[in-house]
Image (cartoon, rainbow, N blue to C red; front, side, top):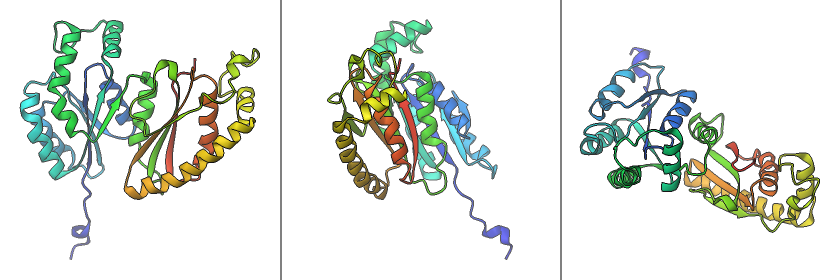
Length: 290
């Protein structure tokens, strides 16, 4: 028997980026490309299966990213059958991006670009939401990008798809934020640390950030912080192995204080070192540090 005939050809991984216009699909697709994916955008839906069949013949090409949106003619009528075919043939995942209406309106205003559906932007956003509702139901991951800067979204998507290293079994994203700017969407675990002593009321610390040693020392050396971290670490040590056993591939943990400048970043930085003991890929996002 020819040894070559015994080689098992692994199915390529297909990640489809879709969602609401203005939610960051282009940024997400670029992040996939940075993570080693072969990416194509605005490919006609009817050609997706043929395209994947052709490029997957390359034995070195194991990760493919495809960006699709409502601008594609025939999108809604064909996408259901195309997704079913892809899922039967390949390891396929759909990442659906969305954002709050006010955020989308602001983004369109800032970029001065028309909505792909044309007409009044607010009406177009609502129509697009309705038309994409079925696709959203098919999604494996739904990410609300309202609270992300372009850099943070790129970092987040990269952390999900850059590939697990060694024995890393799950991706964990730690996010610090300020409640006065709203809590991030799609958080799995949320901790409110507004009960901790606030460096904002200490004149010499007010202008500094939670990543600065002086602020970190002020927060972490308090007895109440030590007690909180002890209990939090116990909970994380209990939960992470169970999430991994369940088969979860990613976990998002949010730490929030009032403004997101001092206490929550200090706690996130402290947890960053502690979490390295677990078999995870870890990413840090400080959403609201000024």
